[in-house]
Length: 283
Ligand SMILES: C[S@@+](CC[C@H](N)C(=O)[O-])C[C@H]1O[C@@H](n2cnc3c(N)ncnc32)[C@H](O)[C@@H]1O
Image 1: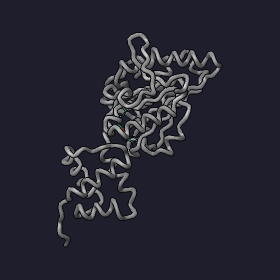
Image 2: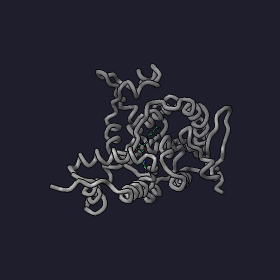
Image 3: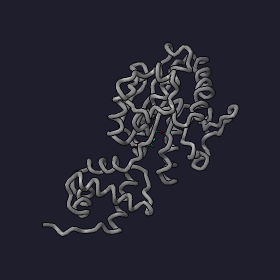
Image 4: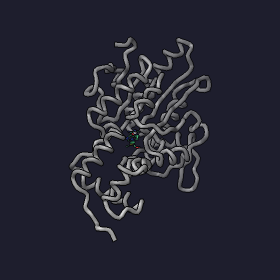
């Protein structure tokens, strides 16, 4: 029989610090109640009978996998196809044609896109659909879409490529018919939709892994940096800067602004759309 113990504020703060160090996500003290709830869920999953035992498992045992499990419990994975349609319109109708024309002029028919923090895959598959729709001579192009996330569970779902009605709610009917097949209550992405997309586990605060990402024309990192603090946000956006080709575009979520984080990107207006672009000449 063990004596049940409550988690102390010091232990909770240490766990908060661990999560921040591992993910860049700052779990604010006002969310302590939610954090405790998630910890209880993980305790139950591993059969820990007290917070103390679970804490030891996180920090002292050679059980680094539990940190990953806890992270996966804490991440917010909400996503759907064609999320933030107006922003995607700007990408499809202005930014993409601009890069396509610039590359064609250099006889370069390769296009590299990165969906960083892709969750269950709706975003990178959406980008695949857009690229196939918008590039007239798509078959002449070598398009690659890297889709990454910190969460192994969402990547498993993403690779499977089967989606319910909730994910599909914003998907125009012609695209449903052309890029998916209906299978019972699910919509499954067709092989040609999945073809340019490659899913990989990648942590945005892993500096070495980030340093390996180079030569992108477009980076999408939407609805994730809101969970970071200013410092980790800045580090990630600076890494994206290095990962982009000169003239490449960065797309963040609508409530996230690059301007507040760094002055390195140019704010470019094309018709009614605003974009963050890496300057063609390095500053
Ligand atoms: C709300 S989803 C956003 C999905 C998609 N980008 C969208 O806008 O619909 C946020 C995703 O960020 C991932 N994430 C959180 N911290 C991360 C990190 N440090 N590295 C990589 N992915 C992370 C989560 O696992 C989650 O799947």
